[in-house]
Image (cartoon, rainbow, N blue to C red; front, side, top):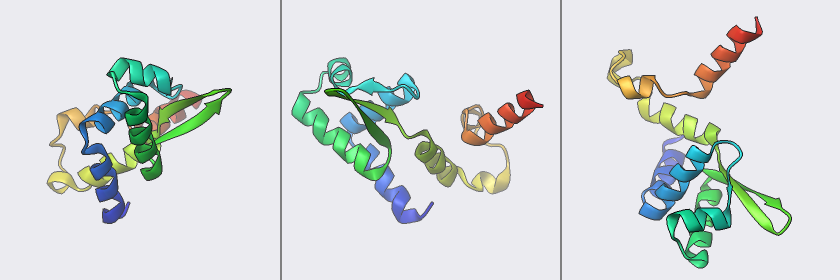
Length: 119
């Protein structure tokens, strides 16, 4: 990940409402949520929510999938994983110094777990 791209992602998450939307979608998992449910849960007016969803979509942190009249949004977990990896790359000269981050379920950990169960 390039520094400029990471800065753009962090800037998008630097707004309280966008961070709340993103965290809610991360918690919702791959199935995501429709826009009205996000707005209800976070008490955001439709126009405000639409603005923030568009911004998060534009930078690649979330994606929207049309379902009939509604749009279901979900977090882009690969983008989140890349950003976390970028932020923690070579942290403490490769020493395990981030116990909370070490327990995060990253793409690499999921892939290794799937490989173990497949064999």
